[in-house]
Length: 263
Image (cartoon, rainbow, N blue to C red):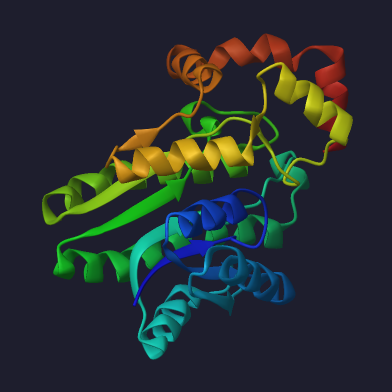
């Protein structure tokens, strides 16, 4: 039986990917480090959409976890024809104040595990001559951002990795789509609900439902990348040509200096 495997599928954008793919009739493997939520989401998908849904608990920052997930899928006799590497964390902090374990975690979660999952499942897709892979990068992949140096760098890695993998896989019937969202209305941002609502109304924050719909549309069309929304496209265009030293005057503003001294 064919499945879409989605990391971070127990909440936020990952949950939207799961819901929308299930609505299309795809069976789902729900992967995250929230065991109870995995079961709840899987049960909801079965009840609401009538598909098969399997919860798989995994700490995606754990060394070797990609192989464990792959082996688990093989044991179940499942075939992964869609792989969505969505799991992630957003960490605001100046690098010198960041705990070493948190740096290891964000690199493993955004770089190591997605790379290894692609290595394992893309090989099977290539052998079958079909498959789809989606990688969640970020608008921060396009230019350096102070206070998220670790986060932005991992997303820049995914930008380069996704491009390269697209070249490698395209002639074998395997599509690779990298998504570059700007701000998305999810619990990832520790913001008051009213603030998030105002940002959404202003077009500065996209809903998880809209992002997932646009990203899946790009994936099923075999597009190499997806910059969802007009504001995201404009922001990426500006970031692509903005010289790094243009940020220096902003960093000297008193409110920004006070913020940087605290994080």
